[in-house]
Image (tube, rainbow, N blue to C red; front, top):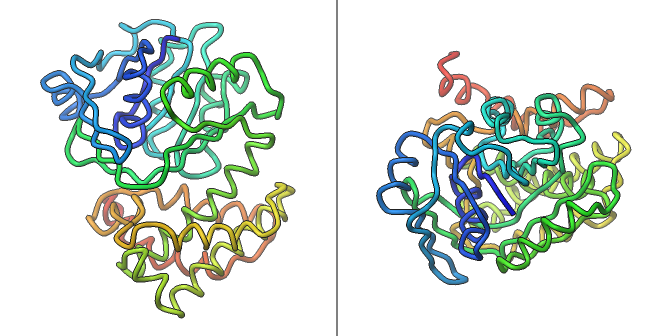
Length: 309
């Protein structure tokens, strides 16, 4: 399978690296310091499941050089997705499929607007991974997994081929029966932990141990669960309790990527997470008071990071 990875950060670097390690034909599309590091040292991955290096790593800054591929894996931040898709159009042939792994629930539609809905899968990943430095990925916890599927729910030959490639790479992968519901169930986890972590400036271990912050975390999730139901997304009963149990098992020092970006004064995925909750709630006349307060509390820092305040 010919695969291109656009965005060689924590997620794109880890999963693209595993595919390359397994012998798939993977090209990493990068620029700046990341491209320089990949060209000089290859892709370095430290992992609780075993360290590895892809050297030389097939890299480029120009998707037109790559030509049509079977799969484009998008590992960029949510707000970069549409632009990344436009830049990657030369890699899309008649049978190319796009798989976004961003946090949030709007990624497939953003891609569909650029490459066409028939080329887009829904997807999500679960992993605790960070960029140690450009081209150097550090997997710190959580068994890496990907859930993905066709937007209309059918199991297609192309989905089966992608599953086989990831399975051969040792990645736990599942074709979801209803990928939109699966994405919302991750969404309520990532939005709550990101926003409450960013507001409190606390690690996951710290905020889950304080009853008051734990209550905010849980109510943020419950609001999003109720919003999903209001939007006719069939999220499962009991998901919040299961997610809270998952939170309790994560490393005490864990923080979300949005939280780290906000704390460092960088642009973040606030609009794709808390902002999306507020927007999507407004579309159906649904009230999300906890998430609205979290969004409002974090928005000034986001605007400042983007030079708008």
